[in-house]
Each structure stands twice: as C-alpha cells, then as structure tokens.
Length: 144
Image 1 (cartoon, rainbow, N blue to C red):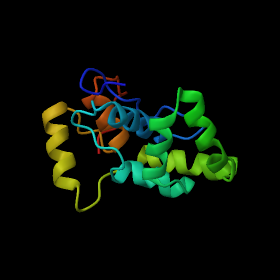
Image 2: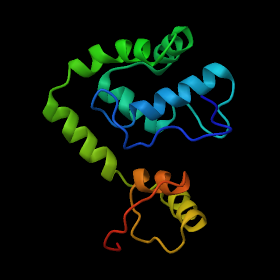
Image 3: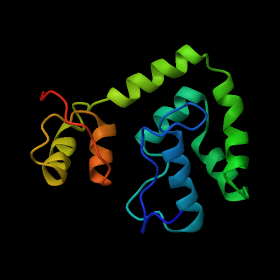
C-alpha cells in the first residue's frame, strides 16, 4: 500500500463487518512500507476503532509488518471482532459513520470542507468529508 499514490479504504468499507478498521490497516501497511504520505496510523480515528475492539495500535502494526497478506491481518483482528455482538457492531458502525467534529476539531473540519467542497454544507460527518477529499462520491443530503 503506497499512500503517496493511492487512498486508503473508505471509512465506510467494512472489514469483518466493522467500519474504519480497513482504513487503519491500510495506513499501517503504508507505514510498514515507508510510504504513508500525509496519513497517520494510530490517529484519533484509528484509536476509536481500536478502543472499540480492544486492539492496541502498536501491536496491530507489528502484526501488519510481519504478515504476508491481508488474510493474516484479518486473522489477528477476528478474535477482537468476535467478542462483539452483531448489535454492538452495528451500533458502532452507525455512530461512527454519522460521527461529526468535536469542539476542538470544528475549525479544522470546516476549513477542510471549504477547501474540498465549499458548496457541500450538507457534509457534517468525517466519513463523508474524507470520502469527498479522496474523490469518492457522497450523496447530497438535506443541508445542515
């Protein structure tokens, strides 16, 4: 994974049924290969999914560095996911995809939205904003 040439997976993409973890894995792969670009592994968004699952970011990175393929990484993550009920996972996914900015990140969020899509005032979640920033389609919603 070379994040100087391509984007990580969307926050929305599910790995083992969980959003955000695939994106974190992609960033970990890029760190392992020395081409993470402007991305950060174990950032607050990654930490949120790690906390939800009970994964330690540095340990996951160690697994990524030693893995031959995605299947080995998923085999490491699977027991953490299996500890969660389907209802817990769906609640996490729904909340995370709707997750908006905090008071501390509001200015950064709004500045990035103005830079990426100044006409998209309907975009209020990080998932939508990151998808727009990475040139993925985001449906127009009722403006906030």
